Length: 432
Image (cartoon, rainbow, N blue to C red; front, side):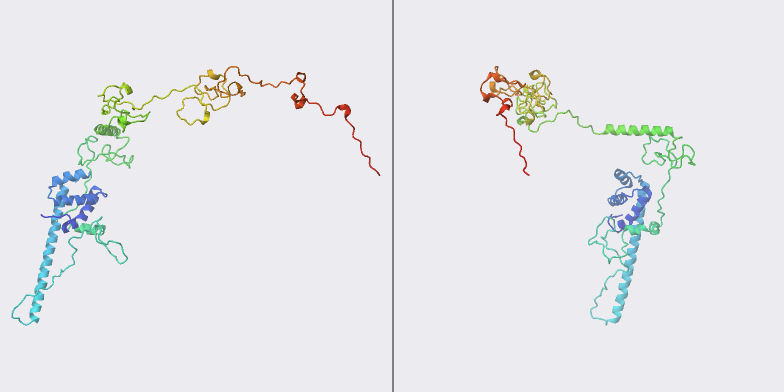
């Protein structure tokens, strides 16, 4: 039997097959693809066992050889109907041609040389183009939706919309092609350890909606009863955990991360504190094979060392110093090891403070540029011996120590006129 998936027989059988897959196996989202895949396998002259094996790799639907054989029978019936229809059309065409020839012979005089005149062959019934594809997902040329296109009922969607048409098409071949889904025959005795993917018995995994008013006897319902199936629910939980553990064991082992990442610059790296691994500094052509740190580190002398090493420009981090930074809070060196005071108040411990996080002011190690002449009592720079600071307490000077009146303070000067020389001001009398 020569069969093509995109031929007339394939176009007629596909919508019926899609509808049956939806009703029987409940694969609504994949029914169209599965139907097309089945037709392609049949067109490739695959046997029913081979078709079942390949379909199981694509979907988990329990498609068996019985269903494939029924599909073969339906294809045979459809092809026979099409063949009979074509023969009838050819016979009608031949009859029409003969009638037309007889009419022409009666009208025309007998010619010397009779030339048969062929009438135009016209089909008795309208036919669809042989290469048309009425399938969902196939875009036709110029397929825009216009206002003048009405009653466009072509395609499997309109054909399968009427249940009567579907039933009539399936029963037209003479054989009863009704697909009836078989109900489960009770619970499976091997569940939850059943290995048969096409098991006809029930595998209960959900709680019964009718419980506790379920009419089925204990242990026979296709769903779980919490108070009756506690042992089965425990086995189901154990089976689920075993399945998860099996998936975990079969998973591809991930690469063990040692925490060391190789530097893409290798021996040419010039970063001082590069955290990545580098080849041995004893050889430029060396490579890192073992992703572990070398014990010798930067001082490794082994030219064939295959371990990771610090950067060739590696410098150890500077230790924190108790020295006071002269820039204080204005320091812009983020690696500055000195202490930075946030307060202008001198620390009571002075230079003997051992706290690295002390925020008070501490003496600088630099010399003061004013030396002995510095008069700033709060100056934190170093000063030589012999420096004298004025006292912070005010002391009144003695007037007898100096006869110079210019050396006397303004608050100690005498009035310009003595008290006995003060003249009284005469009051003016008013003249009446």
